[in-house]
Length: 528
Image (cartoon, rainbow, N blue to C red; front, side, top):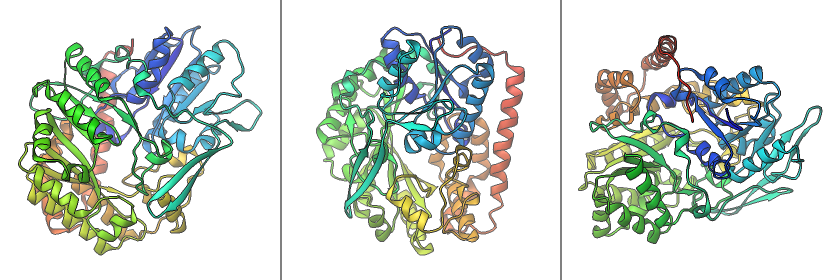
C-alpha cells in the first residue's frame, strides 16, 4: 500500500493505435520517489483488474490520489476513475493535473469529485501538496494550486493567464495574481522511476523486429507561436530542455539497463538549439544503430537547412522515423496559423530526406476557421505530392479543434463555437467528432467531408500500417480497407462516406473484446 496513488486513465480511441508510457505521471512521481515516499502508479490501459489494483494500493497511509487527462475522451475515463475512488474512499482527496486541468483549472476544480488542481509543471507542487496534507498544514499559499474546500468557492493561486499579441507573429504570456511552476533546469530533476511500471506492457510502433519500445521526453515547451497550438499557453511560451549529455545518459539507461531497442522522443520541439540537436545525434550515433529512435516534435525548416553530412549523421544516429507538422499546403492558411516556415522548406526537406531510409509522418489539419474548400484541397494535393516525392512519407489528417487560450480560440468563438460549460461537455471534444456535438462554422456537408478525410488518411498509405502497434484488429481492417482509402485519397472523393459506420463498429467491437478479456483473464495488480 502507498502514501501516494497515481492513476493514468484510459485515453479512448487513441489506445487502439499504440500504448505510450504514462510520461507525465512518471515525472510527477519522480520527486516523491526520490524523497523516499511510497508511490503506486496504476495505468488503466494495461490492467484487467483496475478496481482491485486501486484497493490493493490504498491503505491507512494513503494521503493523496493524482490523475491526469487531456482534453477530450480521456476526461470521461478520468471522471469515471475519480468516481470509483470516491465511492471506495470518500475521505481521500483527489488532485487532477495535466493538459486540460492547466487550460481550465477553475472549471475543473468546480467539479464536486475533484478537490485539487495543479497547474503547470507538477513535480514539486504535487509533492508539496502531499506533504502538507500528510502533516495537516495549510495549503492556501501553495503556488499553482487551484482548490475547492467544502462549503467554499474555488480559490486559485495560479492566477489568470493573459495572452497578448505583440505583433502578427509574437505573443506574451503573463499570469496575474498568481504563479505556477515552470521548471527551467531539467537536468536537476530526479531520475524517472521506471520501477513503477512494467515497460513490456507498452508499444509505440508495429515492427517486424520484436524490440522493447518506450517513450522519452527530453524537453518541455516550444519556442514557436502556432495560433492553434496549446503549447505556448501551457508552458508560457518557454522551451526548456535537458542537456545533450543528460539526454544520452537517459537513453543509455533505457537501452543498457532496461533493454529498450526503440525510443520515441515525444517532445513538442525535440531539437532545441542546433548545437544541442547535433550533440544528441552524435551521442546516439555511438550506439551504432543498435538503438533506433523517432521524434514527434521536429520541423521541416530545420531539416531543410541541414548539410548532407548532418543528414548522414541523422541516419547514423539510428533515426527510424520523424513526425513533422506541416498543417497546410496553402500559403494563405500557412501564414494565418503563424507556422513560421514555408511550403518550399517543407518540399526541400522532403526531397533531401528521400535518399535516406527514414519514415516521415506528416500531419495536416483541415477545417480551420475561414479555410475554404479550395484551400483544403490545396493541402490534400500537397500531401499527395510529398508522398509521391518520397516513398517513405505518409500524411495523416486531423480536424481542427479549438483549444482554450489559443489565438484561434477567439476566432472559433466568433465563428459560432460555444465554450463547453463542464468537464462532462469537454469530454465530447475529441478531434474527430466534436463538430457533431457543438456549434461551429462548418456546414453539415463540410463536417462529413472533414471526418472522411481524417478517417481515410489513416488507411490510404501502406506506411501507416506500422502506427497500429497495439491492435491486430486494426491491422486486419487496414489490409481490407486500404485499397478503398487509397482511391478516395488519390481522387479527393469523400462523398457517400459509408465507412463512418465501419469506424463505429471497430470501436464498439474493441470495447466488447476488452470486456470479454477482462472476464476471462485473472487480474494482477499493476505498479510496484
